[in-house]
Length: 77
Image (cartoon, rainbow, N blue to C red):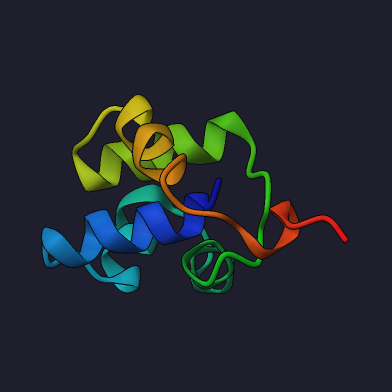
């Protein structure tokens, strides 16, 4: 499951930038960038609620889309 990719896809489709998400959520730009690039594997629920609000979607929409994508950390050797 790749939450960052789901956030990125939803935001891109809605023409919402990282800066927009940062401004609406109050999260630091660097944190939003880490989410965007899937560097945060398992973000806190409170962060996802803020981001979903900024994207104007339900948190479940992010999760359902994220389930379609494999995160590099999901791969086991």
